[in-house]
Length: 216
Image (cartoon, rainbow, N blue to C red; front, side, top):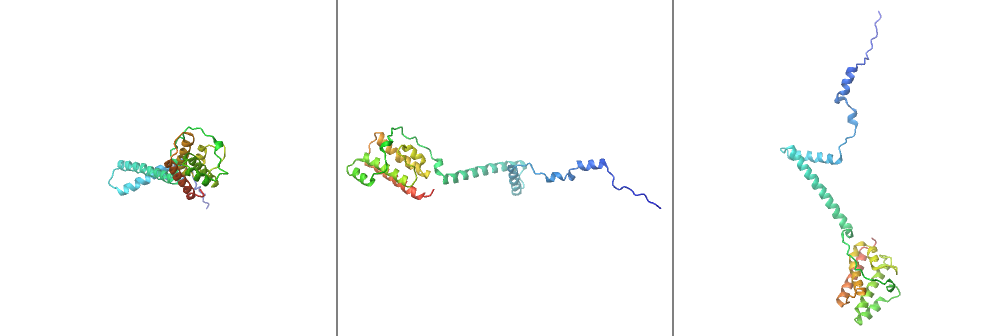
């Protein structure tokens, strides 16, 4: 007796269409990357934490709190970033002072071939503070050039040395020091013992500051 072999594989188009429209069988969607951005992920995470902490709070309240926490966190991160940048590079936050518009004859200011200690002593002995101010400035340029903190050239002006001085943290002090020199040398300001002493103190800060930042 012969039995007919039945075909157990039947294509049911209606059933297949039903499966395809059923989200439970949409396995591809589980493999796709979410379009949710990082900010939204953080917001949802914060909202989840707040809901656990404040179980009786309403959804709108949680959403409001989450927004404020995000804003506060952003402000805190920004403030910390500015603080550490300012601590590492304070010169970036210093206002530039306008240099006096004074004539300058670069040919007069050679820093080599001068015994500054001897010349300064002679100027101070004769109370020639005008010359003492000039010599103190040139002596400082010589020190900075020898330390390779400026690239001295006979044709350069004092303003150029201010902007190229390394490290940059010394520039405000050196700017004040240079202003005193220019005002006395070319602005007809009176050179007094008090002014010379002030410049000598600024010179000390420049020298010691350069040693503290050696290698920067």
